Length: 219
Image (cartoon, rainbow, N blue to C red; front, side, top):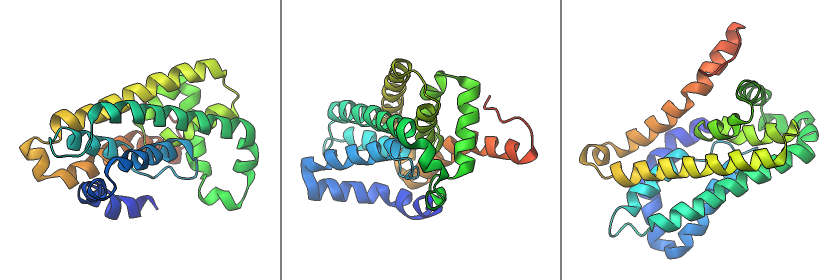
């Protein structure tokens, strides 16, 4: 599924999203909210576009005819990210044991993803909730892992809110200020793919170290 998104959906986002905005009008905000909410909140769907979608939304909001308002996006998607992680935490806390033992669901909730998230959480502690926001796949599994580990909810809420604000602000802001620079526009699809690949580097390093049998850290 991740390969399919990388090779088909992600490169076409820059054409697909403006078409949807033109067709749906203001209803597009609901769709964007749901994508970010599901990407962060539903543990079996960690491969939906997050960073690249926020970057693209920011770049469209910077255009007079882009059809998106940067302030509506900023507030709405922060709420989506916060509520999504909160739901994920609750799922992990109440159903984590059953979900991770279910053989049918292991094709979606892969043990290796849970292992990486658990080790990331073990190393960084509470700050993993904040740091994990900037790592695709791990971003979806960290709140789930926090719920399984029975992390204190008040601590989770603080780092969840802080991480959601930082992630949405940085990704949207990058698109808003740099998405329409000439060289960026000329290679927009490649840049969105690059965003995904670069953001996956920490998880790839963790997987490589894990295969070598060494300690799994993210420096």
